[in-house]
Length: 271
Image (tube, rainbow, N blue to C red; front, side, top):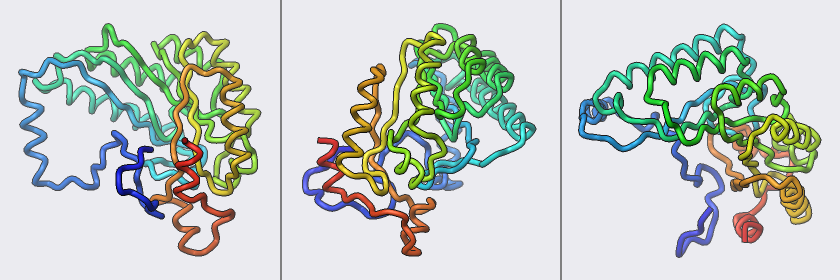
C-alpha cells in the first residue's frame, strides 16, 4: 500500500485498499443511461479483462468486506452459475462487448474453489460460449487452502485455468484463528504441493501484513515460509477494518481478541 506525500496517520476504519471490485452501491439510477450508451458503442476493439465473482465461502473471515454467503446448498450455487452465464450472454449481445476478445479472466470471491467440478465446468463452458474466449492469455482462479483437492485441480486444468492464487495470509496458526481464518499452516503446504503436482506453472500466494495480534517475529516467519515454498509471485495486503466486518463490530464493542497493528508498523514491515 503506497503512502502518499503528507499522509501520516492510518484511517482506523474503512477501506484504503483501492481495488477493481465495482462499488455498485455508489451507483445511482441517473448513471444507468450512460452505461447503456457505452455498451451501444461499436467502435471499441480493445481486448477485455473479465472478473467473475463467486460469493460462496465456508466461513467469512473477520476482516472480509466482500460480498459472500456461507454454506449455501448446491442448488443456490447452480442458480448463481446460470445467472452469471446469462449476464455474460446479455453483455455479449451489445455492440460494445460482443466482438471484443477476452484477454484475461480472474475468478475471485468469496472462495471460488468451493464450487464442485461440475459447476466449474458449466461456468467456464458457458462463458466460453458467450464471449470471445479464443486465444485468452491468462485465466486466474482463487483457492483457499482447505478447499484444494486433486479432482478439482484437474478440472481447473482441463477448463483452461493457467494461474492459481491461494490465500495464505499467515503461517501462524494462532493469528489465523484470531482473524477468523479456517485453515492452518499445514493446510497451505499440502495445498501448494497438490497445485504443483497438478502441473500449474504459475502460483501466487497472498499474505496479509498487520493481522490482529501480529508481531514482528510472526510476520518475518510468514515471509520466510512463503519464500521457502518458492511461489511464482506473492501479493501482500495490509489488514483493514472496513465498516461491514466482524473486526469493526468487535472494535466498536471493545471486544477485539488481540491488539491492532499500527499504520506505522505495517508500513515499516512492508519496507
